[in-house]
Length: 209
Image 1 (cartoon, rainbow, N blue to C red):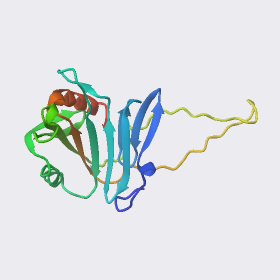
Image 2 (tube, rainbow, N blue to C red; image 1 turned 180 degrees about the vertical axis):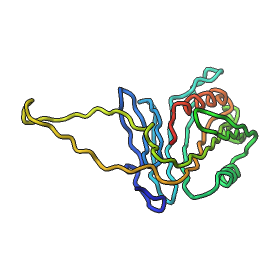
Image 3 (cartoon, rainbow, N blue to C red; image 1 turned 90 degrees about the horizontal axis):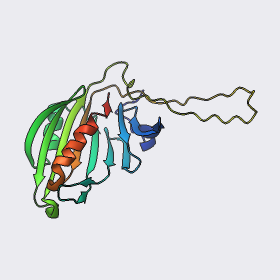
């Protein structure tokens, strides 16, 4: 049973797994599952000081001007016992927000903030991206959706007629509290529309429990 008062290493918090020839980033502690593509870059930081992060850098996006431009997606899991409104106020105060919309994707309500900074990425029309927030409440019998079938390779050194055993490892439950989630999509004006389409399609495949 994990606690937000404790710290957990990267490997205790996150794992990359393969299921049915597809790759995923999973955190049982945080109740999350992210589909991955082998060509993407992924970085994870364990739960420390009531926060955990992962960064996903997908393949470059082709702009209307036929330029290949990269984006990055930074996801923060915040367990600081802030109310959802307090979390939004704290995060959005650091970004030059120009628009706020609400969106339902799957079973989750998201607040979608567009930010813009013309002083950055000037060769691509300036910085323009999204900061997306949601709050996931703890519920009993969660983490069912993030469990996947995995292939077990049993090495049988005693011949085909002997009995093989596979020892299951201990793992953590979903942490027993609500989690505020912030998703920063770092992009430029030149690919803002394409980056927005990408993240909304991607969030439809992500599981937060």
